[in-house]
Image (cartoon, rainbow, N blue to C red; front, side, top):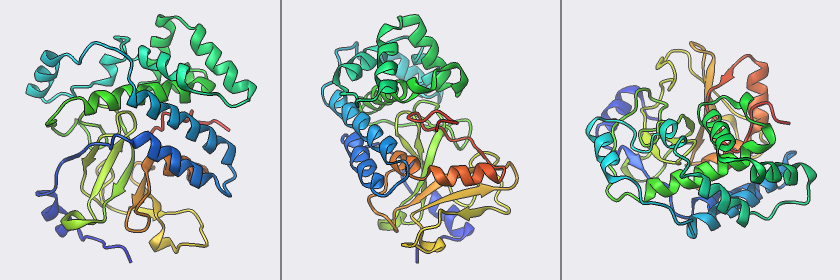
Length: 308
């Protein structure tokens, strides 16, 4: 049975844990491995394997990054002094440095023999810097309707690779909480999911995972990250013959106050779980919750909302 901290214990523990966890340097390779495993027996196997190949290309680009100007140290210091996200997505996405990461990804990615995929890659290669910028601005601001759905995973993958590289390029990173619980303190992007840790003295504490840079930041449990209400929260999971509802490695924290939900990974029940791959592997849960009238506010940059 997973360890559950009561509200008083949560608040007491929240004063001591590290605020930030940075992603590992093999993050995209780990995602690819998990997606391949999750594809087995999954109704969305072809899509999950397609995304696994894209994650492998992300890792190749991350390991051999394009030549770009170093991150502006003055800007970084100014942001830290004023408590602002130093890698602010809504600002940096307009400066086009990320586009070299898209170019590198398109060179490394070996497309599946699918006409829709090839057409999407051709469209990205043919687009000028202004069009790419417009699509990327729309994507990081959640305006998915302004981006052709087939382009979203490839644009999202390039942005993720660039921002994770920038995040890990700054030593001794110290950040302050964002304006809202669900806002990444590093880049200001919304959380994609939460992770309940399972080791050491911080067992049972929740960290949110950024949808863009993959930074993780501590947020106390039993509180909606969107409206900050605690009353009436429910925890729903997919039906699974291998796990009882109380031991499901992935559950959605459903808030009746704002009609939203956030997926949570319980590492005690699956120590190798990873947020992005687990999210993509549990899209049937999203469909169920959407049918019940709940809204998803957590983006996954490798998936256009409403995609088949």
